[in-house]
Image (cartoon, rainbow, N blue to C red; front, side):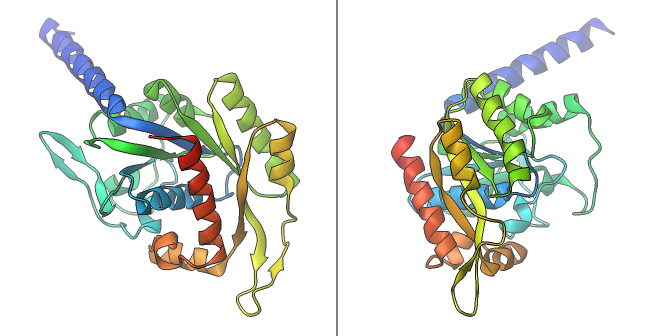
Length: 278
């Protein structure tokens, strides 16, 4: 490799490292939303926690590191939009006044475009989300993770250097709890503070009579939290309005603030603010 090419690559790497360090320093608190199980509603939880924090006046970034299944653009009504890219960097999309979001979903040719990447490429993309994106000063950065404890989660833990809190999402069934327990152990092994466990899809609210039916049982995530001696943040019931709002790209806590799930999310957000002060 020519010497000038090596020097150029080296300068580029140094520039990225400096930019990454400056970005990390400008974020007061970093929260990862994760689970060992897919399909438990991590993205729903991530978007509503970020929205809830923003509604309370905090400046919030929402970072989607689910490289293979980026759904945040759809849930926030941003599908088909693209971030502004200039010589100064990439500017995240604004959802409303103080909520900003970035996702690889904004950079794909179409929503059905697959991403077949190995670990190094995913790591580089996540690094760019932090070093090249101009987040500005943030009170909270909420990070929506893919299921499991693989490449993406390892990368974000390494790149951020310090995670202030992990919120672990589960559903009540035993099959989900087995996988989620591995996530709890991962956080403990990596010395990542666990803010608490959320039980999503905890009962179904009938849209006709308002009664709650325990389709997937209830209380499993709370028992898991007790077993590992970590806090239980609360439960979120199934509500058809959550599905409808996600399909329509409407932030649930903005459009259905008086619903039971929105009130449950609000209580969880209050616990986050109480325990992770900026």
